[in-house]
Image 1 (cartoon, rainbow, N blue to C red):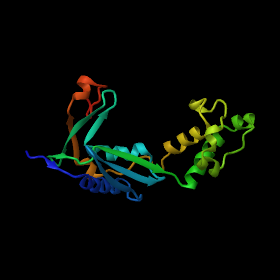
Image 2 (spheres, helix red, strand yellow):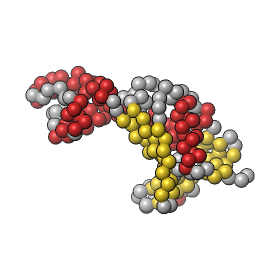
Image 3 (cartoon, rainbow, N blue to C red):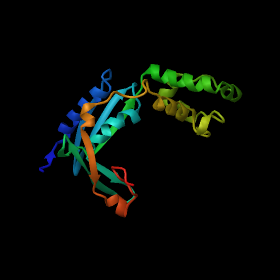
Image 4 (spheres, rainbow, N blue to C red):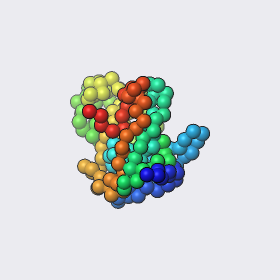
Length: 200
């Protein structure tokens, strides 16, 4: 069966459609970038679902994988509606931004969870401006969560990045129509062991 080759722009259209189906209340920017030797997509949005939830949709449209251990870019093969398709984007990068409201909520979660740690360290509740300016990278609160030793900026970053306004996205018919059949297998033979599909 003849393989259908999609450009990065064509792939971006499918990603936009799939994201609209999965998160109909959200606005996503999906931009394609071409460069020597390949192409990529950047998906950007503010607040809403976390990166892991969005990547669960976008990962189906990625045409390649990269094994940094051997500096190798390999191919991933797909079927869409039973037709072999080669997607035009080698990689898809997800970039989530945060509103002041989301940052304030992240600060509140950390401050409420560890009030005694803040009191004993003599540190006041951080402000949105301190977080946005990056000044909290130099602030440390002892024995804070599993990130003990990390800066307060890192703790708040972890809190807001992990948070989502929903348990999961809706099912996307467009994403569900994409089936990853296999990859080229080179990473498993010569590299870090990456596989685009489950290998038992």
